Length: 403
Image (cartoon, rainbow, N blue to C red; front, side, top):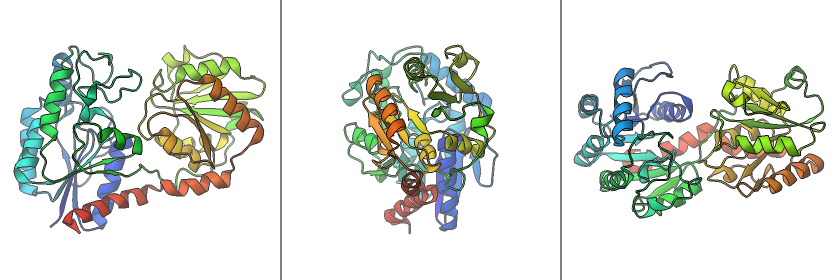
């Protein structure tokens, strides 16, 4: 029997949904698929063949220990031991790793098991954390220490994953030891940008394959609504931004600056995913939408917009870009991470990070010339079908002798 065990820090949200989708398709291909994750404050339903690695209380305790000591992934000994005993019984053909940070599993114990039992491993990197001393991204810090060894870390202590002490030099060495030496491991990255970074890291000896993330095209598609009328946007050119956590990393300050530069009689900026704290930072001429009821409503908002603007400063392969294009709305983004890999020349444009003048000029040009059509956006969106991307993972499993 072919057994697939996937491990992630949660069973919902973006990475959890990716894990679920791959496992579901794996079941159709003949795998007996298990999903392993810790209990969380925000969690989807527990379904058949789910393995809850640790309770919410134990997960929080391990996060506190990780924050106090800086040793992320070095606790959860008892719960990991129980989980590994389950793996002993399941004898997985493939273990598919996703996000391992957040202190829910003892990482050295997990990798000792993998090496001892010669298990085939697929590891999808959703950020840079696996090859740094602590940070998931280092673009804003302009730090390249991860290439040779971390230490004196510029990454803020209060940023995720939090650490009150700087032991990044030690953690970099430990990760290099833990993650190297796996007999059969393929690293998957959602973007070419991240793949290129992996090849410069201590993981460079492993094969690296790019499999882009995808979206549900049955949900994200042109969806007419009365959204513009509801918010009094009328015939103004609507610029949309969407994020689940607004701040400098997602370019909140950029939208504030654009609101000062663009003619409010012609342009309307609208941000989705805000909260009361974000609202305090916004001028009156930016419309704030705290949350949407469901993905269908989000698709309606994408459709209502004229241009999706993504001034992100750190990113892997942002889902929001794909969602906007699939709803027929072109994308304008900073040249950051894998963000510019999503729109092609028919459905979007790219400017250098933090070049607000260029961003403003492109917004004006796109609004006046209208170079992008709904049809071209939808043509590009065919490449975002999540089922096709999940199938690439099944093909990868088969290529590793599991067909």
